[in-house]
Structures are given as structure tokens and as C-alpha cells.
Picture 1 (cartoon, rainbow, N blue to C red):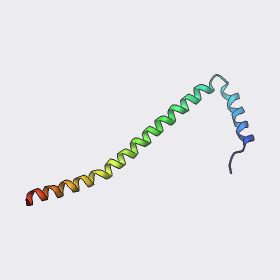
Picture 2 (picture 1 turned 135 degrees about the vertical axis):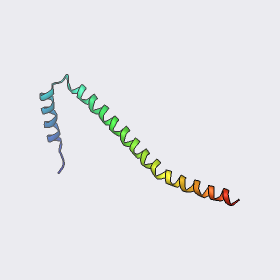
Picture 3 (picture 1 turned 30 degrees about the vertical axis):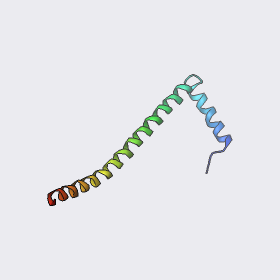
Picture 4 (picture 1 turned 90 degrees about the horizontal axis):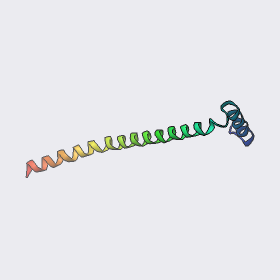
Length: 72
């Protein structure tokens, strides 16, 4: 079930009546900032996961290098 144009227009009219024309830009700005912050946090979390996956590989590589150095 999706929203059609009549439903979207009705929602916009209700928002306009509830908040007034002066508050709508402030609300939109706040939503934009919140979205930007959410995306930044999501990207940081993804980077943390990538780094966590890469760390065990580095440790395994370092251990094998240490063994090679001891054997040489």
C-alpha cells in the first residue's frame, strides 16, 4: 500500500495547519541535520566494522612474519 498524490497533499495541508508556515523551514532544516548526522554515524559504524575485520588479518600476517624471522 503506497501513498498517492491526494494523500500526500492532505498530509502537507495538515502539517501546514499544525505547525504554520513559519515553522516548516525550521522543521525541514532540523530533519536535514538529523539525516546528515545519522548518515555520518552509519558510515563511522561501517568503517569500524571494516577495521575490526582487517585487524585479525593483520595479526595473522604479523605472526607469520615473526615465525619467518625466527626461522631465518
